[in-house]
Image (tube, rainbow, N blue to C red):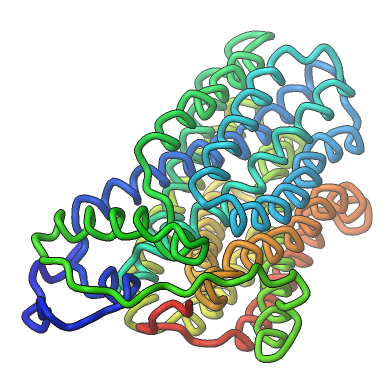
Length: 448
């Protein structure tokens, strides 16, 4: 990341709040440790979500599952994610970002490994629900933690890079799906057993990643907040400066999100989350199964999905470049409109080349939009509501991710793949319209 290594305006005597002291710092080794440490957890989350798409395609053949049964396997995890995102956000504002992050890794890692022992659809559905509880809570909490440590001038870029780890995790899922799932009758079980890795990684998160300075101050844990800030200053070779006493505040209620001046931004954010979740999960959970249904072999379907997944990486890179230069709102809206065009093209694709080209475009624009969305979500709320605000928006979005996989069989019956991806394209357009109602936070400090 290209950022200055020194700041000539730093004064050793000027009093600054701890948040201002963090904002003045260049990107350093402590930022890198936090970003990579959180990003690995993010990638493991994506790997788990992605694996179920390949498991569904395999079980459709092995267990002879109906489209409705497959829809429930795909959707039940999102029921857990809706609950997990809401509860996780509330807990993050009460017991800390890092603690909730580690707990969620433990929950979904153990449950994913146990899913590999499933003896039938009912057992798999129950365990996927538990997996969802952990997955749903992790993402908004991790992005909040990274956002609160990132200097304001590069905060958007840093959070988009964090979100780019999702592509690495989904790519890992595609590799496992391609190399492991089709190899034997129990290939899908071995794939899920690999999902237990996050449980072990939770120990690292709890021991090595810092707690949010803003959360520590807000809870009156001033000495810990000061130690955390100084560790980042030492990493930059910057001398500490005095900070005024932090104000300990009472925890506001969830309904504060819907009071002025937060009401409009909450409504816009919830709508973006809803429509993006509907289109993204409806498409990417079903793509491998739809390709198999169109006559491609399981291996060929997984190969296409692997190629399509690779296009996520340049999508994130483009969003990371634009978001701090062009702004959050125009970047998010533009990538959503690009996703709409790509979705419509995928629904009409009838050759291998067209499927891959449209699928890659869908990956590029859609995942770039996700990066921008995760950047803007935590920063539009004050510290006391940041976890709750991000978690509640994610939870509302998960309602759409529940409905989307369930809607695919019905839409297929009405008008085939063209109608399915036409509906997803319309959802992206609606998300882009809602994004215009979000505040622009480029270059602004987070509100305490």
